[in-house]
Length: 353
Image (spheres, rainbow, N blue to C red):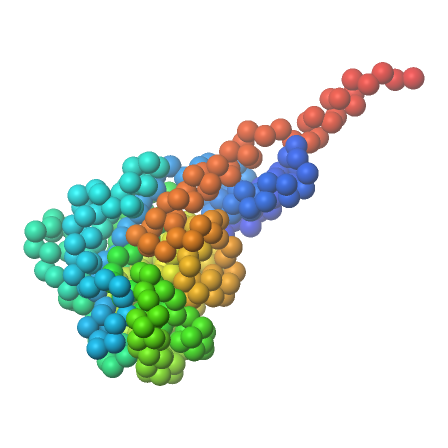
């Protein structure tokens, strides 16, 4: 079992005491106060700084459920490879938000059903396979592939941490990935398809019925792995979700904070927390997507999202939208006066009788 690093509880307690003592009513700054305390704990200081070197890693992969005779998405699987190329060109939503907030974007092919021979070798360096198995009928990965994907994710986290990033942001790209994520959440928590399946890319009622059928079949194959997160990734995950899970595990092991995005990172975080209890302390939920399984996963993890804007794109767009709020929170600790510093001088200035 992977061991998560320990959060600095003393720094958290000191930051909470300072937040409570600022020149404001107790709790008046709401979630900003909690974010400042979280940053204190993950940075190990009662005077946390706004994260500056932010690394976004987009894990790309295709999913066998898109080749099922029951449609699960509003878009064909070819879009995955097209979007990988668009990330590299800089024209995707994640690129726009990353430029606005000074974050680096790295896109990696873990399981795209395309050779992507026209892309830089770095994009394909961690590729596990072309596409993943159709999880309502077969395992997503072999045992060796699941191990390779988890190891790739850990290596990717090491690369970003060693390069000096102070906040990691996992992003996703893959047609059919909300079907996989819903299955992972449902299997991990013992839920039915109707409880976890949403609209994904904006599917119509007929397509949602097909998606429900696929997820219910996949859950039938995966439920026995409820207590085995690594086995669940092998049976019902994919190369990209297994790699993202390894990425989250290594970040927690090395004590690097992560700003989570939507349902895919939420599902991976749910499994990673089970593989390394306590890892969730290193994660902040950037937003809550419209997917029901994302709400369920966040509640199971005890994470309260920074934003709830009805977003459902993925790519790390929700997390990047929340990044300015996260960066604002520690400024309160360093810039605001304490209530005592205002009241005591004023009391000393009062005339005595």
